[in-house]
Image 1 (cartoon, rainbow, N blue to C red):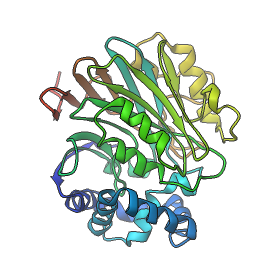
Image 2 (tube, rainbow, N blue to C red):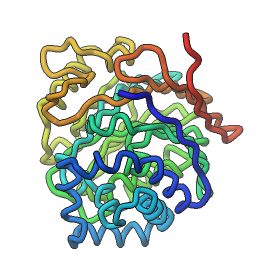
Image 3 (cartoon, helix red, strand yellow):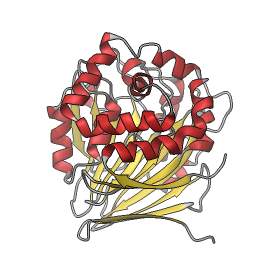
Length: 345
C-alpha cells in the first residue's frame, strides 16, 4: 500500500468538507464499485436514513454542511454520501474493524489499529484540520468519509480512538460517525461522556478517551439502546464488540476475527502496545490484518500510538512497521495541534 497522504484543510464547515471531498475524489471509482457502497447507498432515500439526515441538520448543522461539501468535492449525490457516512447504522456488517489497547498512566497510552476496506488503503490519509467552528484537530481520514471515526486528537488535548461494534438493530437517533465527528469539537473529557449520554444514537461504537492534563482514561461503549462509560485502571483491549458488563445483555454480532483479536490482545496485555497491535502469532485470526481473504473484508491500514499526559504526543505507523511515518503533538495550554512526517532513521 502507498503511504498515508497528509492533508491540511480549514475554513468554514462546507469549505472543509469540500477539501475532504477533493482529497477523496481519486478513490471514487474504487469506492462506488464495492459491494459495501452498493449495499448501503441503495437505502439512501429510505425513511430511516432521511430521519437521520433531519436530525443531523437540526442538531449539528455545521456537520451537515461539512457532509454537503464532502459530496460536492467527491462529485457524488449528497444522499448517497450521507448514507455512506451512516453505513454502520444502516448495516451492522459494514467493513469497519479495529483493535485498541488502553494502558493507564501517567502518561496514559492509547494504541490503535485502524482496519478497513483494503481497496481504500492507498487513498487514506491524515488531516491537520483548522476548522472555523471548533478546536483544531488531527485525524485519520478515509476517502468519502468525515473524520472522527478512527483516531484523532484535538487542540484541547482530547484524544480519541474508535472501534466498530455491531449491535442488533439501530436506534432512532444520530449516526454514529456524526457523533464521532462531534466529539472532535469537544474540549473536556467529561463533556464528551455527557454528550454521548444526552444525544439519541442510531448505531454503535466504542470510544477510548483520554484528555491532556486529566487523570482519566475512559472506555465508552454505546448503541441505540444504552451507553456505558467506565474509567480504566488496568490495561485493557477492545476489538469490535461490546465487552462492558453493563452492555452484556444486549444482542450483537461478534465475528470470528473480532473474537480472536480480543482473546489474543487480552493474552498479550502487559507487552508494548505496538507489539500487541503488530501480532500475527495467535492461535486464531491475527490482530494485524493483512490477508487478502480476511473474512470480514478488512485489512489494517494504519496504527497509531498516543501518550497522554500534560500534553499529547503521538505516532502513526504503516501496518506492521515499528518506525513511525508521522508524529503528532497537542498542547492544550497553547491550544495547538500539529502533524508532521517523521524524520527517517
